[in-house]
Image 1 (cartoon, rainbow, N blue to C red):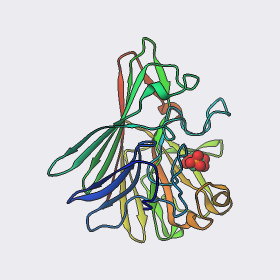
Image 2 (tube, rainbow, N blue to C red):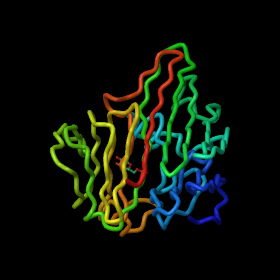
Image 3 (spheres, protein in one colour):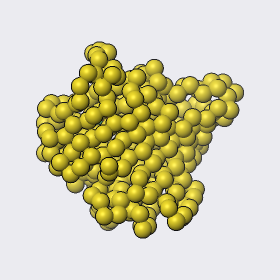
Image 4 (spheres, rainbow, N blue to C red):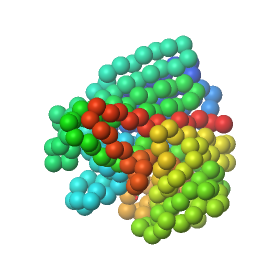
Length: 274
Ligand SMILES: O=P(O)(O)OC[C@H]1O[C@H](O)[C@H](O)[C@@H](O)[C@@H]1O
């Protein structure tokens, strides 16, 4: 990872793993379990600018995923471009825990007029667990969509398969739902929103198998921009689509989060080399 950035980040080094977490967006940018290959992908072209989500790692999409109903609003919401506050770093023998919160006073009320709290907990061992916790502090119900938009590495996307989406349904480029009957491979632009998904998928790459689990989530997104979209993406080299994919733990579509006053919801993703 580039270190000559002005953006502040936490660098965690333990006997189990190393990790970097940027305060902007509470964005985890790297995670390497000890004696294992990197588990998380970051673009070589990332230039770590203020006010822009990083192209890689785990951008946090909140309080909407994708393009909002109001199409002028920023794609994937406002959490990934705002500065979060480091609340706690707790070092234990078996894991390190890092907790950040999003100071709501800095969020434009046009986008999010509600009283609520948002924090993220990173549980770092040889396994990475990320938990996004929403609490409704308002006197009315609130609704939101969200995702932990995780970028995974592969040395060859054409030799990579995602197992465990079978039995779910997907929407692709606004069409569907279609039934997912098989293991998914990559041979073109992939941008699928899955619902009714089981809680564990496996990404089979030439380097080994990555397990991707989810808690309190029955939806996820599978994405690879492929050749044409790669050329249009910011901070993404034209050929980098060959070396990455996103499998994003979500609460989208009919799996959106609806919170009564006082209620909380925790979305988790759990990833590790098998
Ligand atoms: O370029 P970004 O705003 O980071 O979005 C990157 C991608 O995120 C998700 O996976 C969406 O489903 C894609 O449609 C989008 O292109």
